[in-house]
Image (tube, helix red, strand yellow):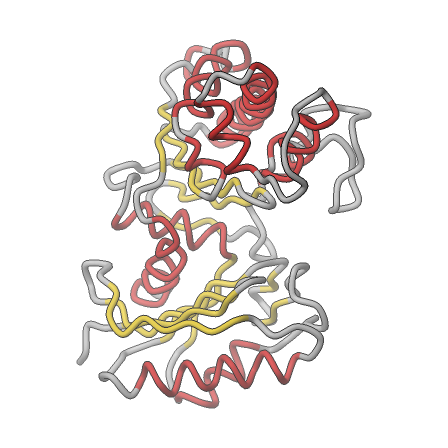
Length: 301
């Protein structure tokens, strides 16, 4: 039997597919832009990628990471960031195409699984993986096992409320950590507080300004890091975490995010069992979702 798994990662910008071996190494990686507005257009992209990558070698199973929400019992996906795709039966469709077992996970959980099995989380039993980018997502690995929750959406830490009565969130709630610490919201706050930058400036631009010592940019990252620290401490108190691995575009800011985040944790993580939580940058970059999806399939999770 082949030790390779075919992994898919379905996101709002691109759909990626690869063969993944038992050590989490990717081969035959291919990707295409994500079509919007029609579920069958998305399926055409998925089917083409599956056929192309599968032709490169034999595989034992298929793992699918998808932007959420997902519905694991139903095997469907309804990504908020892919217009026109709601309740799409991806497990059944991929299974019919390949004749193989298909395992579905939310993209945050798959990121956490990838880092747990082959990245910065190796050896940790109780960890949270976070993706801090245009939005904020996450996934939990508890006692070494991926925790899907009731529907497959457990670990959605971006919607932990850290500012009661705060700004409305895209999820329909208010005061979520995403409203303070996502890339666009860091930039929005910085502009509202006097940061001068080009109209197309983004979180990467803001991070570069912070590295240069720009006061408003540094304040923006300290504010966002404080919100992340509050969310991390809250999640850790609920499930007794030992490690939080953070990836995504905003996390690439490096020390201007991680230093104030680690510092702020002391403000919120006051209980003895919370004081030794480690926070680490992700190691796998954009490959984490594929590696994690493959791990779900390989382990039958």
